[in-house]
Amino acid sequence: MNSRSKKVLALAALAFAARLAVCWRFAHPGADGAIPDPDGYHRLATAALQYKTLAMPDGTPTAVRDPLFTLLLCALYVVFGPSYGLIIAMNVLLGVGLVLLVQRLGEKLFNEKVGFLASLLAALHPQLLYYTTQLLREIPQAFFVAATAVLAVEAVQRASRRFAGLAGVAGACVGLINTALLPGIGLVCVGIWHAGRRLGRSLLIHAVIYAVVCGGLYA
Image 1 (cartoon, rainbow, N blue to C red):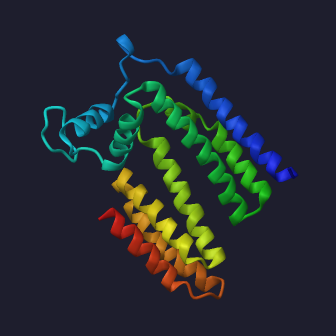
Image 2 (tube, helix red, strand yellow):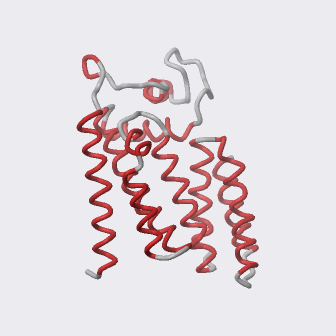
């Protein structure tokens, strides 16, 4: 194992340990083991499983929340059953993944030192630690945003159509988890094309692939 790999492993361990410590101190279920549900996602997920559509607990169809986080909870509940511990575990794993994505992005755009500094900040960022204990969309949302950025940069630097398509998948996930981010996600295709021009490459087809995959999945 080389020096860089050891640093990445240590970074992941730090991010994991920090999140476990915060959860041990602050993550507590409600009365009688109830899942804390400040924005109603748990109720929406259980209703969706009951009525086979996005619905309120009384069965009324709804679009009160963007769908992806609710559907993600549904998938977890189908496999493992509703559990506050399960939700925390998901946030911990996605949080560690987010930290590693930040490291990769910083390294690709700048250098290894910048990547590790940025990821260290992400590993210990108070808000990212706080949201680990919450049944809210912020941790998955941040993960998908970072994944979109990393995959788009890979698409440009490798001139890879496959990575452009994968970036489109991640971008669609961002839009489906928070539609307020759609303008920024839409501009990624422009960024791919423009970055290609700056590097003397024709990446128009890559930008189109991103736009088609992202727009198609979102629609």
